[in-house]
Amino acid sequence: MKKSSGISKASRKACDTARIQGRLLGETRTIQPGQYLASDIELLQSGKHPGKTNVTDADNALNILRYFMDTPTAVIVKHNNPCGVAQSDVLSDAYHKAMIADRLAAFGGCIAVNRPVDKATAEAISNQYAEVVVAPEFEDGVMDIFSAKKNLRVVRIQNIARLQDFVGQRFVDIKSLMDGGLVAQWSFVPQARAKTDLKLAACDYKGKSYAIRREPTENEYQDMLFGWLVEAGVTSNSVIYVKDRVTVGIGTGEQDRVGVAEIARDKAYRKLADRYCFEIFGIAYNDLKDRENKAEIDQRVAGENGGLKGSAMVSDAFFPFRDGIDVGLCEGVGCVIQPGGSDNDYQSIEACNEVGATMVYTGQRSFKH
Image (cartoon, rainbow, N blue to C red; front, side, top):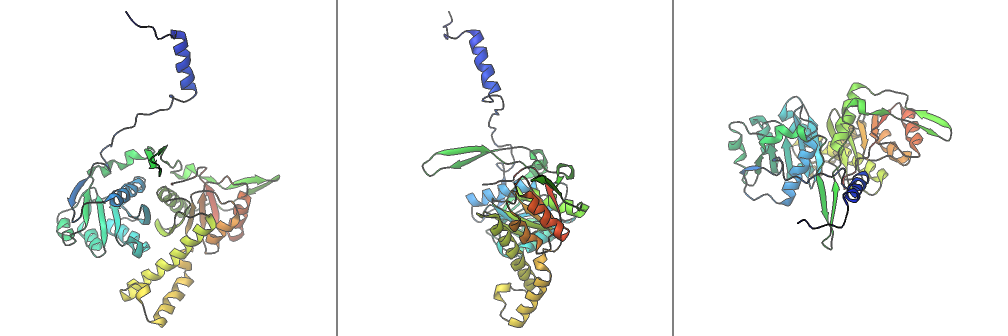
């Protein structure tokens, strides 16, 4: 004999319908265990066992790398933020560009690549100090090169080939509170992943229409999309600059958008000066004592605006006023990608039109906290 629940079938059906319509149950998903990617690694070499930071750095590198599986790409992450990301036709060149974009921050970082590591790339990595190397495979002779770096953690994730399957997928992002409480939220997923997803900047303000006058070039679209997808792995508030599918300056985790745009700009200048010094003299810019040589490097970097001329400016949220976007435009930035949606978008549009720059909207903020 069945026990009565005290609720009629019709009442239960009404309750179930209310829950679904109220979206309490309608869009739930079972929390899946690891799908054999970042959570299923093969440690080939480790002088020290990977720590939490090593694992989370590798995870965020894969988080970025999943959007770039069609081209050899290198992502270098330090303390859960990318310090250099680059693409090229050859893996060793992609790694070199990512490393030299911020050679100082790359020191002791986590390097993730989406192609098997060849000898040329392994030798380049071995010339620097790295904590972790993550790759789908390692060609013959590569582990012999890495064995000279006893504390280098070498991680093989053969399922990196499946990274593209994770594009558009969310994961549950859990944060612990100081009293032991937990906050769970879905991770951010960028919806703008192709040129057709972007909208040329335009808005209305007090009865007047404003619109960007210049359409982006194909190279500008490539840089803006590249930067926007890298942005998905950068802690907010953030602004980054990109040129030729290489990060030029990355500003992360700041309280105001003007400040982070300035930090990214200043880093671009400093990192380019260090790069030139290292290429010419084989030492860091901060170790160069000769004032005359230093002045020559400074003059060269200033003449190139820190490598920002013609670059793309990427912002994870809209610019509330034009003062933030002016930071990049004053350095010769040629294009801007941002979510749009500010009451003062017209200011940013006017700022771009004044210098012949172009700008597109994604329609979605890229917050990562």
